[in-house]
Image (cartoon, rainbow, N blue to C red):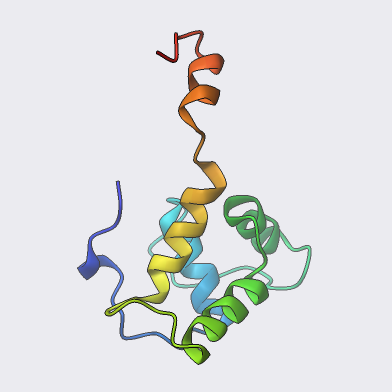
Length: 108
């Protein structure tokens, strides 16, 4: 289920590295009451979790967001959290044929 707009406000369209890690954890359900992250270096557990969940590093996601802004490619009302949510969806989405084969169902 996609997040509701009020759950991830659009006011933070210039996110920091820490903001991205926290948002990534929240989207995949690994959030806690604390707003702290672990070590944020390449190869750290936080970094591996993000890369496994979204298919990209935080630096690449931030650069993609920057390029979307610079080239005026964001849709009206487009928010950073929507980009991160879409990356997660694309990482785990499987076509109907793949799902039907996995579960032994007839794709017709």
